[in-house]
Image (cartoon, chains in turn blue, purple):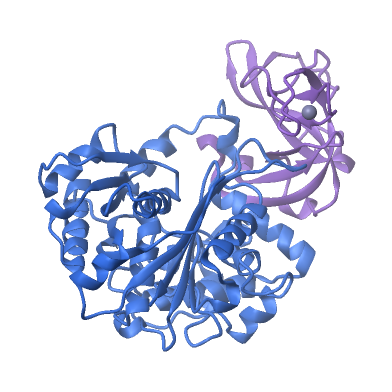
Length: 386
Length: 147
Ligand SMILES: [Zn+2]
């Protein structure tokens, strides 16, 4: 039987290399910067690291173990993991359960990717022989939006309001790829280039490069290493793949049934011993803002069919009932691939410690991080400050 | 107007039929489970519903119902045909059960959720005397008439 509950697991440290376009930086450069920052934040040396999980999607074979040599050669086990967009979240899930089971005391989870070079390679190769290539991620999620508009009367303005929120949250995040210097209005979002009707460019995540790292370890070590600040525990973590139901798409879908988010979050809420009403902040896979709208309901942040009214009220904005995508989300902060889920852990950890600077929320004790990975999987973790 | 019919071949074998008669719509090639009766597209060896290995090939469609759709403002497979810039894609529920994602033929105004569609073949390139065809769906009412 699979368990989602974790025993005495904490995030000891977090670090990032900003997300954006960095043509002159290698994966090793970005990974080193994020990893050294996380170890410094945790107050540990590379000699203290028992094992490493490397989260990367598109880098060539051997890249994981070779990038880890940037920190030193201490003989530790290094494993590379790939689960599409959920790669960083999947590596974090594995690291947390490895510590919980007693296998390791302290684990580094390092994510990096250069999506800029990846896109250039793969888009050249689109070939109708791969029948799935006619369905791009933007087209796939646009079909979520069309269906939602048909069923619930959702308007493009609702999507634009989510996007504007995330862009404006990104403005407050030094690691964000998109940091507008003026407040972004929903009108501006709607007037940007149409990508796949009804989704515009500003409702969609950019491609980019970046790195992020989390140091996961035993909760008692967190107290010893940094007695000056609160312990941020990971209460539960889960990763699920698809369950078959009639109407399942076997070709072309970027992510599978909506039910995955319901099933995975239910398992995590049960493991964590809490529910959606206990959450103070939430990060989701908002590669396209229609996803964020659906996840409000699928995660239980509001009832079925209530998302539009909540958006109109500003429930998920900073200062709202449950702020979502507080660091800008994939739409603004960016989505390089491997590090994306770890950027969510970075944001949540800083918020729970009270170290999020201009983004700091007034009330931040419990946070949830949600990612989807194409193929497909859903990965969710719940973090809580002691 | 009678036009010499070129030979046609599917862009990828095993996914849909290419009828001899160009007026006849293509069918999707899926699987039926002999134990529970569930249908799948594309073909699979093990039933995803009951895990039975007793599965056989089954032609699906050619009709279907539009579950959702969009128009994507990128060129399809780098095609230079104007029709393929701003191309439609849809999720279509086949009468046998499977939902498929395929390109749509036509303009955005012609589509609405829940409408009946039918499969057709579209040439994407020529190789000597052979047309390479993909499968797409069009509104049932818009049948007939060369573009
Ligand atoms: Zn069966």
